[in-house]
Length: 308
Image 1 (spheres, rainbow, N blue to C red):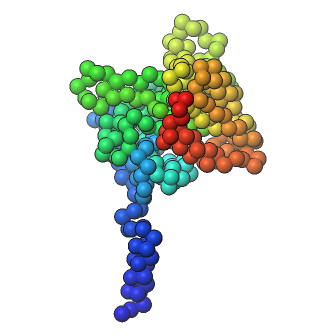
Image 2: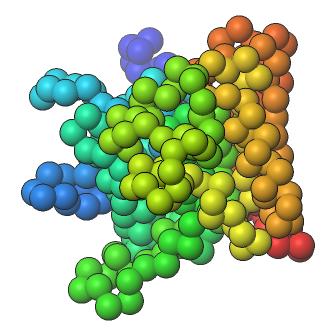
């Protein structure tokens, strides 16, 4: 018997002794079609954990609502942010759905929102197939992804009971959310570097001085999660760098205040010195925000508190 064969047998015996089998490995189910828009497939990747806990999390990476043009452009679902935030969720047993949505400059708002709503409805409709609880779906995202996650957590999301497509009859509302550096009041972004991306998304610039009767003002208002806050909203964990030059830290402060005002569970983690980006560049002794994300999902998704 060769030494390689002996090592293989020994490794197999160790796996059996520890209760771990080759089948108990995380895997990625790529390019799942969650909808079609004008003949174009809308795709997501399903990150399956080795030991599922029965709960799903929709992950929307930040992109400035934008995608590069060209056939070779990488899809949003394969953003580097996936490698930063998804593995810890998968290791904890969560089934994670990384979503690609329509983007600027080709598509303006509300295309992005419509797509992520469709993704949640698709996931909920196929919950049994994915091995998750259809009634308890969470969401996580950063920057523009956090904006969309916040919309999913605050908007009603009721499906259309008369739609011939059963997926569109499902609710698009999340039951728990994590939003990193989320733009929540699009009329108060100011002159930050995120204003240009916002103007491209909405098709025009708008702020508090814009006439309220104008289409520009109404569009920005309708695209702002803070305007949908109500007592039945999902608990939201806000994470934001206080030196963010793209999405002002004040945005998360306003959202925290609005949610507290209607008694929705909320927590704001302030990253001292952190600028805009998935790893908060410039942060001074940042807290364990990945650990906080897991605790939030464990507390409000897996184990619903008695007060909820």
